[in-house]
Length: 392
Image 1 (cartoon, rainbow, N blue to C red):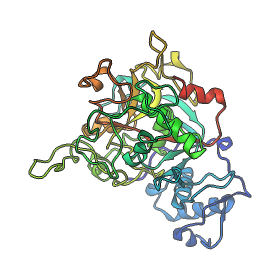
Image 2: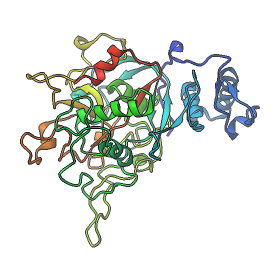
Image 3: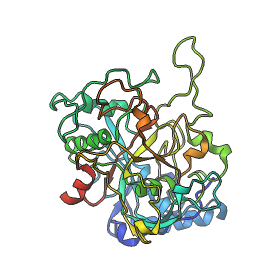
């Protein structure tokens, strides 16, 4: 189903100008009078996509900024040049492991769910107008191959407590729970562990990474839509785009019956921005602390610009373990929990079976449904802004 309800794109957020170039156009643009053998200017792209939209059935037309995002995602450069805002593949040192980053254009949208949306929860409203700046986002959830590089980085000391430098101590059990490692999403990490991974990744790549804010996550998930899911309101389409309780069971051990489990990343269809698994597979940490009334006017009048509710401290000045927001739903959840506006609050039960005293700062034994993906802001943040996301 085509996206519905386009967001408005703030021109000041789009970094390209008439002399800038996007990736070379795919074959469909040649039908609009452009050649794929030369770089494509933004002005030429606009003319081409206008022709393309005119040729489409009006019911299937995409918002223009979504078309631009699709084009930017179509070509994957090893490294974007200065001033370019295109998709690229990022290597993690010389490990042989890499991940894809997708450009998400900044814009304005209505965050939360409308009062009439089926299965809506009270903490999803009232809807509020939000503006976000452009950023890159991981095409897929962080995999074990990526996460394990941090866990095994011998250049970092190990510590039972996060200190901004150390890596986690070894897990005391298999954190995949036999669901698979190769190509699968990393799970069971605490919120502070996900944040510290992002800090490590920034240092390894030389590019600043962090968790997405809740607003950035929903903007990227919706990809211009106002429907319950980014693929529309028709639940029958969910199996093509999402891994959830109805379609996740598989055999994990020979002779055992099928059981609910996560899937390899990137196997389902992407949304209009080119992001996979935004609905289901694993629920994804976002940077914000959980507020049940986050959308209330008392927490910020509309339009809100790049809203973010930083993680809290406990009464001893340490990072608060709970509650933080997770988005997207998971392999073990029913379909309504995968809606674009659905919110999930972390809680102590996610670490209930941890036998350690005190319980681990790094791992959530009962968080088998939780993972994350990374973002990279287009504009390099100030040291003060970085501290808001990285501070312990």
